[in-house]
Length: 146
Image (cartoon, rainbow, N blue to C red; front, side):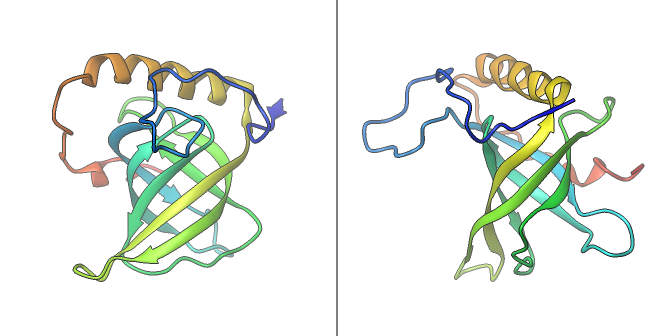
């Protein structure tokens, strides 16, 4: 069963800074993800920089096609199956120094189970990472089996 995550009213897991315009707490966590599936879509490995229950920010080497929606497989751990999420590219900007692209994805749809797994992950990791530096170990090891 699927539920739309776009319109859910939620309480933040942590307070946002006064100048912060986001409604959701964003967990700063480097993760791996694969965008698209099958032969008909663009298959791209992306670095996830931060994530909330309604979207994520990632980087990629090239500008991504802006289509109405596409599938994103998000790897929270190397041992568990990925979350399968329908997403759309909300914004993209080229990073001047590296030439890479920073991309904002909006979550459109995911199963109730995946939504719960994501919420549990964000809350658990948010508590664990509080006060620690971001772990920059390679997320590229995620997704090799998909």
